[in-house]
Image (cartoon, rainbow, N blue to C red):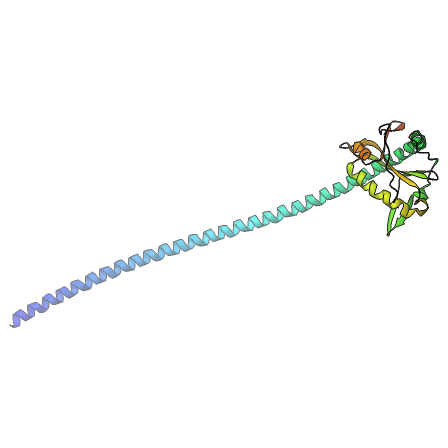
Length: 234
């Protein structure tokens, strides 16, 4: 009995050692896999950090580029604004000089032209009589030809536009506010121009205004012979 028992014990011990070795192998394998996984995690973490760094650098460059583009756009806008201001100033100077020349030209022929059209005006109002303040705003009319019962207010434009015609008709309603002594007179309107845009001269005639074209050293009324002007008396 004793020999048999000893034999069993040795066999059990052998099995136990075998189990220990297998367990140790599996633990070592598991440890190896964990180390490999840890290495992969560290590598992935490094790659993520590198990608994050590159993205931050890229975003920073984009932000700096955007700021530079914005600065350049603002600078360009300021330059364009300054250029527009200078062009506008030159345009005003040019139109102002042309306007004065045209006013002189139209004034010289106006009374004769209107009399031929049955408007018996006799003289042109002085500068101070064509200007005035109404509702805290300064108003000025280019040329005003009058007699005792009728007057013709003339707007002079180097280039006539339809919006100029509409604006002038509104201005006509202000004249007797500035000069009440003419409130009982018949008030006619006329536009004088060197160049007309988009058939603005025809538009003016439809609005019952005299249309005067300046050409070279003279001026002429272009309305049809049977044209009847509107009385803008308010």
